[in-house]
Each structure stands twice: as structure tokens, then as C-alpha cells.
Length: 233
Image (cartoon, rainbow, N blue to C red; front, side):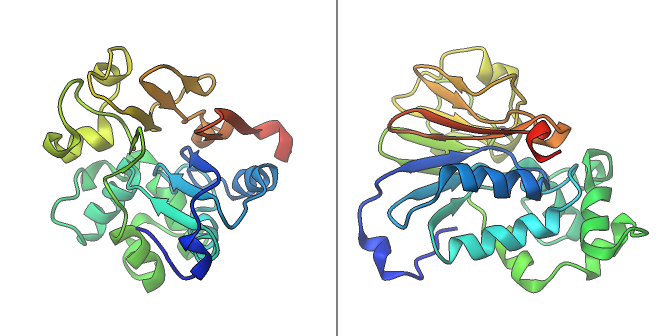
């Protein structure tokens, strides 16, 4: 989903910044953006998994929608948004509705519907603006030498031929082998001890969903921005 609500978006991007899995960690996200200090000429690519596990999924989505009204933003679909859409019955391509409860969905229900909420409450408590956001998420995005996906790809297979399940869920088969394509794959999904910067892949999930760290990288310079759980106290 790309927003062009500001005429300044015609300016070429000065920085191309990818942001890893947020997982409801609103305070970490705010501090990360304070470190990045977004500028109007930046372009941001968010890699999915904005919700679940953390306690403030609703606040994260509110923030991202408002952020996209000011800064050029691309939002990818993560496996957690996909499970939510499947659970809500809003996308026939979405998968694993039955797994949503065991993957942090209860925390998202509490964020949207209050501390005593159950998963079913999500079906009547998510604002329409948020539903529109979730339904508009991209499975992948390409810019310059970079291919952005949530989880990864089957090595050697063009992105257009990848299964949607692969783009959202793959781990080891992608992580431990050369990508076999002519793009640098920028991904999240698999928690890593630190940001991974390799010749053919860049990994940005540093465990925000497990109260560890939230990270981003400026892709032209490889400058890394990280907020640890300890920093938000």
C-alpha cells in the first residue's frame, strides 16, 4: 500500500529505510522513529507483522496510518496480518485462521477491545480504517536492487512464481541458502540476534515480539537503527 498524499513525494528518495517486525511494540516504534528522524524525501518499507504478541497493536496501526500521510510508505503483509484476515473472513487467500489464537491474537484482541476481550471480539472492534490498512498490504515490493518480502523466497525462483505461503512463512529453506536471484532480499519474520547484512539478503526481525529489539536499516548506506527493550524500560 503506497500513500501519495503530499506533493513532495515527487522528490527522489534520499534514504530507503526498511523496518522490521513491530509486533505491537508501540513504544519501541516511537523511539525507533526518534532515532531515524524521518525526512520528507525518505521512503520507508515496513516488512509486516505490525500486530500480535505486544500489547499495543491498535496504537501501532494508528501510528503507521498517520505516518504514511506524511512520509512515503510501503506496507507489506506479514503472516500475522494474514492470519488476522483469515480469522475475520476478509480475504479468501489468507491462511491459518485456526492458528491465530496461538500466535498472539489474544493480545491484539485486548488492544482493540479491552483487557477482558477474547479473540471473537476482534470481529466487531477493529475500525474500518484499520481493516482497509490490513486489506491493502502488499505481498512484496521491488525497488532498485532490493526485493522486500516478509519471510523470504524459495531460492532461485522469480518472485512472481512464489507461493503466497512462501512469502509469508518460509524460514530455513530461505535463510541458510543463497537466494539465487539478482536482487538483495530484505526480509523479517525470522527472529535474529542482530540485523543480518549479507551479499544477497538483509534480515531485520530482531525479536521485538519477544521483548528484545526493534530494528531498521537505511539500505544505501547500511546504517542500522535499533531500539532494545531495555531502552523503553
